[in-house]
Image 1 (cartoon, chains in turn orange, cyan):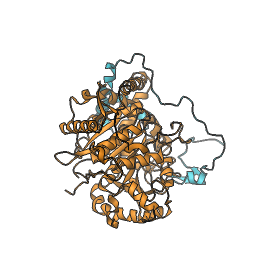
Image 2 (tube, chains in turn red, cyan):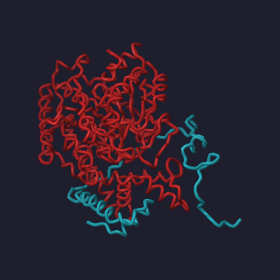
Image 3 (tube, helix red, strand yellow):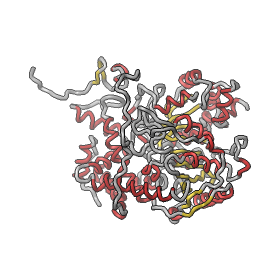
Length: 492
Length: 99
């Protein structure tokens, strides 16, 4: 393997060679920045904070023994790091350096991973296109005129073009799975509470979950194994050991996947529907069983989500007041005007819109009609999922209703933007895990993806099904020696 | 449904946000559009559905003892826009105090 081809390798392969002493973590970091980073980054703009000196010193300090030994990892800019700024791509946190690492970051570093920088995102993770970033948009490496999805768009794009084999994002309504689908990479949103939220800047606390993006299902499984498990610093972290996902390569013989075809009768791109059908056939060929199911339409989830998420955001973002960190408006007469001017100049338009909406939904006289009703609708949605999972091990469905859309196409129409989360939001409302897997390219060479949803702690079967899709349902390829071809973006 | 201008301004004050006068109508229309979307919940049968919160039934408590992760005042104020001697600085809150 030549040094300049290292960046094409999986995290699993790289870590094995670092542990064997064949490679040094510094080689991997340099291979990334001298290779795809040099070629792509100026056009794609996936990274918002990095620094060659810090990258080298992180590589030198990384243990050579862990599951991710020497593997370069990029983090969404809402995960607290002591060595790079953490700004949530918002002016209000300009220059902020947290005094501690998020628990997931600590665990990554302990497993040998090298944090190489921070990835672009929609401001405070509010958006589906990475256009609402104070650092400017990220572009989709498969077509630079299109969005990478969001809000973890920088993380997904960087994995897609080859800067890093693994990145961490966060998923409040689909913010890992939707950009993974748009960029043609694998994206996992674990069960609520499985990965610690300590050090993840809060957006919607009952929905937020740290997620993993990678080019291979195996790398997602390894990273999940490193990160998952209880954390005494997160009171909502799930007690007990995380499920074992090392059997992701065990095949899908006898697994039952639900097929809620009523969800894509209208309004879903025909090529996505065709990709779903091919995926279902591939899973059947590999020994899984298709179970037709009727499921509650996603529009109810959108309605509940935009009340719950904005209500919780309005409360969580109250802490940004120009006193303790980040930006402060230079002109103020008193504390009230200091807070109001700082927040009005520091938050972007979409964040302000959501804070206003959430404040409205929580305000006196509206609480029962909006927030409480939305929380009750979540219970209804959880029951729908419970009924579905009584019949199957996972649901197979679209990740998104459309292929990646063009920059500017939806940025002025909040409701149109919100509808791109139609298929992903249910998992956050119900607290269940979801996985998006790339399943080829469209006629225009844009990534096609499908989504798998499972019951709580259903990560093992999601990864087994995802792995089977990765090899096109070909059981003879379900071994570690037969890695899948990656649909690399081409320059155009 | 349409959210009136005065209501938007009341909410903005609660949220400590200032909406420029020429933007109030646009913000009101955008908020109204999302509230209309949310009105779809009225069609859902929620009989017998208690609210979901994901709050843990029993909060896992840590021992009430220092654990080495303490944040000293200097580090806590290191990213503050204005700080002095480990204190955050803000404009006067109470003025004209007679000694």
